[in-house]
Length: 196
Image (cartoon, rainbow, N blue to C red; front, top):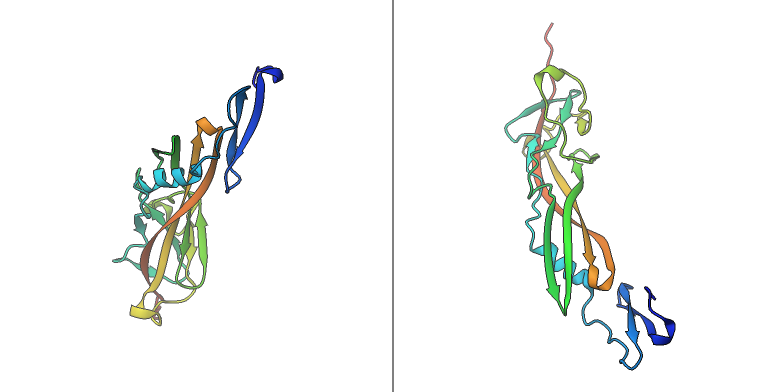
């Protein structure tokens, strides 16, 4: 009742087809509120569509790079506001204003050899001082060379999951949904030949 006297009116719960809605107090003598004509999540999706939610900008593996079987590969993407967020936008429809905020919560790397690696950030850039160490947060180790693959390279993808959090204050409503963006990459992986 939010401080209202029950004798002064009624409380109505407005529910949309998506089970979203809000609670409103209606004084005596007023008609019950009409069902909203639009789902606030649809408005949130419109707000998200207005943002620049781009796929990851893959820095490693590099298309021009050559990698070695059994040696740790460090994967990372170059973060920016449009490739990792956060990004914010608002949209209004049917008298409902929704604010949505988006950020990348994980990147799923399909390595092209049948394995996937999920990283919860852009990854750490490799430095020579790291030697043969594995990446602390986003790495892979190829066990076979890529010469039998199309073009002699592993064909992979880096898929960013954008998590969008939205609020519709007028309806006392909110929620989350996800969107994905994908960048392809290739990796040439060779065996080291040792001659005695």
